[in-house]
Length: 239
Image (cartoon, rainbow, N blue to C red; front, side, top):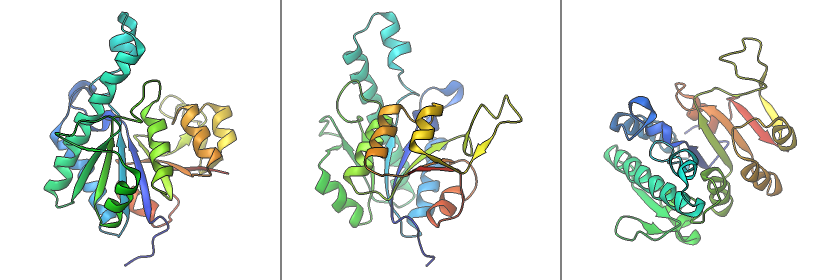
C-alpha cells in the first residue's frame, strides 16, 4: 500500500455538493458521486470524517432572517438541514460498503448518535466513516467553524475544504484569466486577502491550533487520492 501523508482527514463539503438542479435539494446521484470519492481514499487506509453544510436546503439569512426570522431560529433550522444531508450521504456510503456513523451536535437519537469525542475517535479507529451533522450544536457558528472544531477534536492531520475550484486565487479565475493561483498561503495571508474559502473564525481556530487547511477541487479526478498521498494538489494554508 502506498505511503500516506495524511492518515486521518476531515473533509468539509458544502451542502451544494448534494444539490439537484438549481442548487436545491438532494440529488441521489450526487450523493453516490461523493461516496465514490470517499471510498477511494478509505481504500488507501485513510480515516475519514466529514462535515457537510445545509445550503442546498436552507440559507438562514436569505430564507429566514431577511424575512424577519430570529437568528437563533434560522440557525437551528440550518442545523437540521445538515442532518438531512448527513443521512443522505450516510446512505450512499453504506451502499458502497463503507460502515458509517452520523454524529450530531444536537440530539436526534432516532436517526443519529449524539457527538462524543472519544466515541468519534473510536469509530475512526475501527475504520468507520463519520459524518458530523448539526454543526457545533450552537447558533452563530458556521459549518466551517464546526469543521475546524471537529478536526481538532479528532486529531485530524488536515482539514480538506472541497470546492469546485482547483485552488485559491487572488481573484475569481472564471472572470479573470490573469488570476494568480496559490499553491501555499499562510493563515495570516489568507485572512488578510479574505480569500473566502472559510470564514474568519474557522481560519483563526486553525491558525491558533496549527491545523493545516487544503483547498481542492473534489470533482477533479483522483485529486483527493493524490492529496492524501502528498502530491501537490490545490492550495495548502498553514504557518
